[in-house]
Image (cartoon, rainbow, N blue to C red; front, side, top):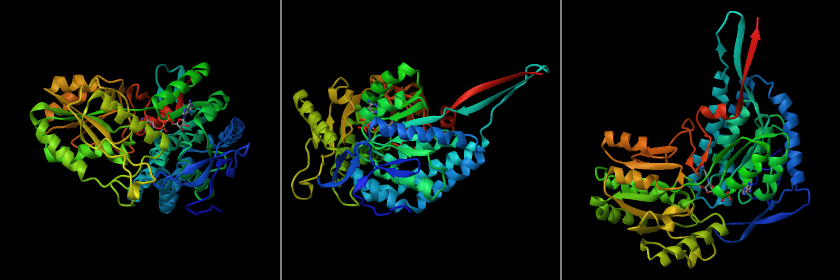
Length: 484
Ligand code: NAD
């Protein structure tokens, strides 16, 4: 029986089909970002706990890998149905832990269910190939699972990011030990419980270990059953994990940070571009890897555009309410990091068109709220244009023409996403072809489907989640050559 109480006092790991406290009984306090008050405790798992989870996944692998793909797929599609049926519960847990306004959750729950339904369906059409080269040989390829996959996750969209890695990994016959962020593990633990207890996945196939990356990461890398790791997180975590993984030549998929250019050309629909560009940097309070935080605006429409854009920002409703446009910053450390960039902007003498402060007093007095912030006339060399802030802060950078826009957009260590606003279809294709980014969205910002590959150029990472290719990323290609 699953406890469906939304506010449980503790979050424990889910190992071999059951909830387990951490081996040494250590818990950390979970603070509600809306109020600054403690709401629950979160297990700080040890390396020993991780070994139990990986061993259980390794045992389950022997059975799971041999199930016909159609049978694995049916269980994942069933999990999609269970997620939809429990959407309110999952959404409430995630909203409480992240501070996301409740109205954001149904779309994220729907997306989470879709990943399991999509990969549960298409795995049944994945086959090897026959290589016909000689009548004396029968040669074919197979795609074999790796074994146990480690999945490390951030706190900004816990279920969505977990599902996009876990669903394809399980579909092709791997088992999983997932490590959600130590700040927001509750919804994924509940999802794993639902997967085993209500959808019928065998115990041990899908485990969740709750704890710190600096403890669980090294344990994950050194466990022999772990054959691949998918990490969604910061460049720093990617670098640290990459160094450890290099010792074992462990393959990684890295979905890291961004500083994405959102380019507004003079032939665009200015009203639509102004509105869409606000969402680009404020969705989820700017805690979004793909956020359009470098807003490149063509010089000849700059003043007109900025006026409309700032008016749209002024109309946002930030707050603890369920229907607010955006909520608080999820962690205290992130709240303080954003403030440090306000100080850097002041030192650099940037022009602040709106925002630039935390929100205090009244209903903001205890939570972690910051004002959506726009700096104008910024050079692409500014610290605020180079570093990922991960908060609702945008820099407006003027440009002359197409060539100039491409040069500035690509002058970044990151290459996760980009936006183009233009009604000239030729220009759209020319610019999209030249941008160094894994995802280009035109005449809106964000977007995409579970079928759309997602990943970065440069320091934004390598490998791709989502789309049909992700199935291949969680398999190893093998050739079988038979002399007849
Ligand atoms: P983070 O890097 O601090 O943590 C991410 C995860 O990595 C957490 O589970 C953490 O415990 C773990 N971790 C930290 N250090 C580790 C280590 N040395 N070894 C192993 N694991 C370690 O990131 P965050 O603050 O949780 O999330 C924000 C970051 O995630 C931003 O940089 C954002 O751009 C990025 N992100 C990227 C994508 C994408 O698809 N590219 C999506 C969401 C978030």
